[in-house]
Image 1 (cartoon, helix red, strand yellow):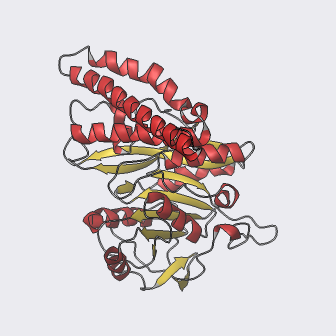
Image 2 (tube, helix red, strand yellow):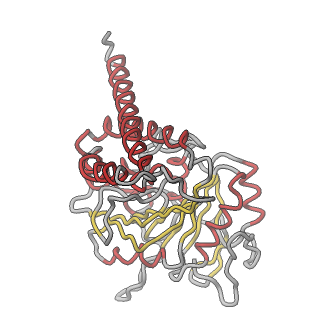
Image 3 (cartoon, rainbow, N blue to C red):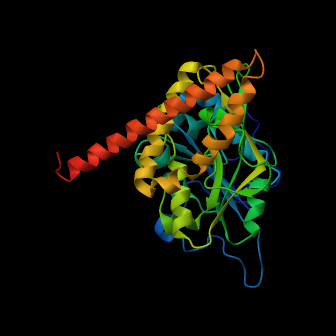
Length: 366
């Protein structure tokens, strides 16, 4: 978001009292924070259209979704990191997921951003759709409420959109451990804590889908392919996922020639709590990932849903397993690789059979 002359930036971890409450700053102009939320149906209309013969930079709407006051300090850090960008965001939208207390708190503390309630179904998919619906920029970037964007995140995230075929771009998500990485935790499983993992490209490359904590998409895509699917994705602390997987698969199948890129130079740091660094959470998240992948496969087919996973299982995990066996201090990583794969597969099979039984019941079969 471009700041008006003389307005200070929000410091990470502090309320944004440096800007006039109840207003949003766009290209140096203050507008009421409740103005024109927009809708998916209106996305054909370009907001702030270019003057005839005059190009303008792409404008980025950053959406942050939050659901609990227990993450208040994380939320302020996330918002503060957006204000510190070398490429200013056009607007920042904080979506509160069905929590009136948090909504009132955020509206009372933050200025210079739009704080709105989730108007969809409870959960991350509904909150993201609400944020995308309210956005007025050319690009919608999503940042998790417990993530901190590095100063050049938006700059690197937006630069690939100079190519018209690029419809989505994701960045690297690095773990910020509350204490330290557990010795047994293999980097190949960093997706368990919502982060980039060993096996992803090391330079700009085409991918199936980015990681949700730091992804972006052209705003008009929502009007063409729809939003994130309700029923997929995290609801509160329940560690389901894959809503971004299904969304980007749908994007690529619906828009001819669409390209989705991964730019590891666009970096955000994702806080990993001690609870998420536990073996119990590791297995819980692996099982939930299997369940979620089964739901995606039911919607888009196994070939599309598991394309990246096949390469990951055949190439990345065997290397991780054998590497862990090379030293007495890292054998526990090999155990985590093997058990993580087994638990994820069990979740997938359980989810697949649940879908199969539900399909039979809907057809009236015994």
